Image (tube, rainbow, N blue to C red):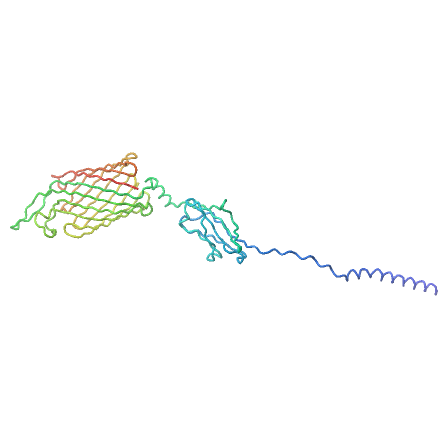
Length: 386
């Protein structure tokens, strides 16, 4: 029994000694310090520019390109370089802080013209080097600039006119109404009718410029009128004249005119006249409505009135007869110059396009204030457009 107990004790001592020996390496392993990991490399910050590219711009309007710049402290400046079809060299504008921001570059409206323009975005670093960050100068980004309807209309009209916006013209006309009756005061106070040769001539020069937009044209006319007319006895006489001298009439005038487009086939004209007549300073006005093609076949209805000197109303139909000729019959009712009754004028005019901007027109007709007398008229116009 004693031997059995001794043997059991020896066995237990050996077991515990083996277990302790086996645990020591694990404890040593768990207590060992971990080896340090290798340090990771950190990239240096680099500047970047972010923007939403524009594909369409409004004609003649400032084009704004907005952007954000990361690490702006590393950028000396950001540049937008652009070019247009009419100026192939690049022009530059800088990105600046502003609304709608944070950075904005603006292409001026005078450079935003149909049909397109191109741009690239570049940044210049602190060391002076420049890098393209969007597109490049060999393959720039394209922005379409659609043509506005008014621009298309102007271009079409200018093409029809061979690019000639300005017109100088000179005209002359002789008008004979035959003989008209006028009252003349006698020395004894009686009033007797007298036959007066009712005629006048007119010489005029004008300049016209054609914007061909809402304001289609504006012009200035200057001219003189001289003649004889059955001036009413009750009207004021010219200073220093009396009796039959009152039949001598005259006018020096200037008249600025503007034509406005209301529609492709509807234009209106307004006119203001300043003049000096045989009795002194006078003013007047005029207007016209133009139906149809303003530089082709059309109907014109108009009037003109000048203090003392008289008024006239007319209708004129311009008929395009081929590429070179225009025929224009006209009906006019007028008491000019300074007559007491209205007369009717029936006129015809033929205008020829001579080429190289030159035109020539001849006109003729017949007019009368009374049914028993009348006379012819003749005139012409020469013009040069450039």
